[in-house]
Image 1 (cartoon, rainbow, N blue to C red):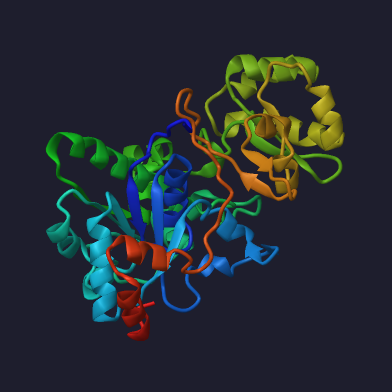
Image 2: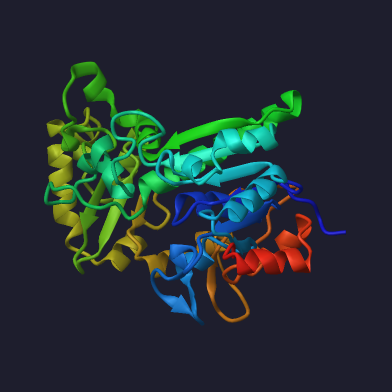
Length: 390
């Protein structure tokens, strides 16, 4: 018998596209859930065609759709809707990420599904949520980052907003939805009832800035970034350029970390500046670090600080990050027999660990199999195909 996983026996119907929904259902598939991806008629999931490919498959799709099943249904046909509702009736979780109201118009909204399956945990993921003045406003990740104030906190050295390297709204709302649906599944054990989950990307961003609202809540003003604890106010919580145009960081402003670094650099006299409150008092320490870090290459600084008890690190490129010994040791990047790199499982259970099964569905590959499982014989399937349902 294969070892069990945490989500074995959970069946998921995923209508979402792009990143947030597919990322969370990927996480569920890695832990044993049966994930059925309902792809639109035509080209299907857009990330099948976004970005670089290996052997005809995009890395984006490979990173979001391993070990899932794929069906295609035309939800604009009566029969397609009926099949989708039959399928939803057999599932524990259903996820959609249309604009508000679209799932209802397609006949697969929460009330229609709940009428068939009161235990369904139904998740609607959207930019702004299912209500409010912006609910129909077009948006992707960057739009919600702009409105929530995240972009204004994410300024480059030029003092201008810069696009973060992580799709913050997508990924935080993804994990927020996953947390919510697991709560709902846990509660369902007691009540037998599912629930409806409304997660907004903008809401998730606000909830993720708990540590940066100090000046806004206490003094009703925007933060001055170089005076903020976690946004550049500390000499020893900052980024510095090296002689070879690379960068390093100090990522811990605690006194003992600052002292260890300044002792090693021969400037213990700057400890007072480095341990004042974030802001102008830190300027002497910052100025010294800016100047001194420019005198050696990144590689030389790595060697210099080896063994020093301070929170020093080099700024990696992505290729360097995927080959980092710690990242590799944790199997967060691993290779298959073809030499393809894959992202590992971040939730590491001792007794029922997740598994990365490297199988990806072809577009609509499991449509016939799933229809047969719902009781459609060969003749019925032929009728559905002739009607343009798949």
